[in-house]
Image 1 (cartoon, rainbow, N blue to C red):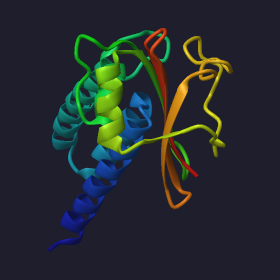
Image 2: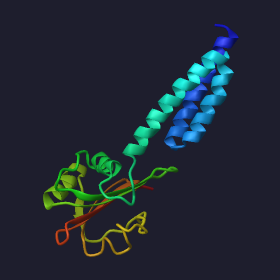
Image 3: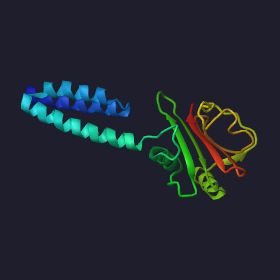
Amino acid sequence: MSIACAGAIGAVISVLAAIAFAIKKRRRNACISVVLAFAFAIGSTVSAFQFVTKSFRAVDRFMTEQAENSYDISTPDAIGNRKGFEHHFTFAPDTSVSNVYYYADELGADCQYQLSFKCDTATIERIINTIGLVEVTNHDTGLPPRADFTWWTPNSTKGRTLWVKETMDEYYWELWYSETDGTAFYHEYSI
């Protein structure tokens, strides 16, 4: 294998790694800059231009899909919010589930997810059984949920029945629900 070919393969691998990082961070400009820089390092202007054009299209298509499927902390029932529900509970929310709000913090070593939604008791029972939650009367939250959303305030979970699950003091699932207003609050996190 020639040195030029090995260099081109290395550049392509670097481009793919940089694109993956930029996409994960949802930074389109960073992704495009990386593609441009490496494309021109690969070879001739014509092949680099073709590479850049195809990369732009692929990145734009992917970023558009990501934007359409992203959660929205201020809009109930956004597509990404409902997908967040499905991701955490392993079933899609049906018509009895409404006002789904979702938040995800996946930066750093630990993660934190919060959902709020309205549903019937059958849906709550399904979630409890799917995750394997247990009802408790007293529980100290290892990581307090964010309470600065319009849909999750410091008093949101007061007076609600609580179910929890934890794995070796590392990962936690917490679900609060009240039949009175049919609203659930879900908190999942690692420490």
